[in-house]
Image (cartoon, rainbow, N blue to C red; front, top):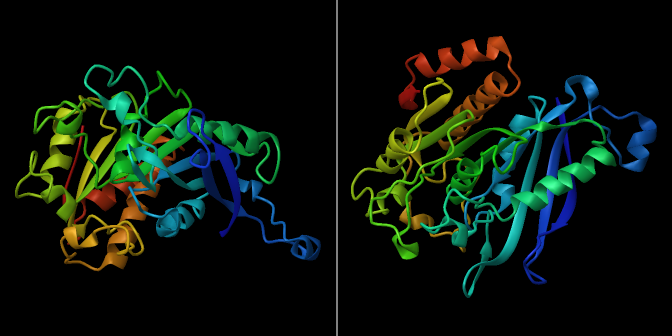
Length: 323
């Protein structure tokens, strides 16, 4: 399937210029254009799978959205619209960074779970409403089937805000290299695992070589998978068999990105992956795609394929469980 993209921008309320602007890249399944459309540079969306569920992909801190384009393309090839975005703002006092939009104030013990923690999400949803009314994707978006996904801090944002109380249009979430650890700096006891919303399907993935998890010493002084596993075990009640935990053998914190930017991200803190990063990325995209096809697009054959993929012996999968 042909995948094309276009750019947009959105303002975030409550932030001062110039740190109030999000830049979006929207990838979509496209039709092969005729000669007229080639001359104008416009390639229409392919209506075959419309209306399209939408994936909003939250990047890790200081990870450029372009590093996740490989995954966005894979998902768009399956008939999804995928939103990548970059937001440079003052996410922490005195610190300007690329951020997935984390509202640390709303993560404090007295406020957590009473308000959303995703400061970028309302602006992104408002932009999707505009795109539904005009432009290439007009009338082709399924805005009642939005999937939140992300990596690292962005994965945390996706899990914490897949909550129908605040965002009823969200249908599922997925995360890689993320946990719901409570930060001592904002008032939590070391080792605290915070509860997550528990009414929607969730796919949580981690790697055995995730050095950033190892260095979360208040939770996991030695084991890279402990914060992820504890999040699955303690933050989510489950009971519907649609919450998944997948631990990837040999995957590190940046196995989900093309290449971490060593000038910004301290990739030296990570452990070296012991499996092919390309093979890991292919597996990650297939698991995510089948999860969405099963629980958002409700394709019966996808459920069987997902079960087969996760239950078949695979040197890249250390463990899998669901509840």
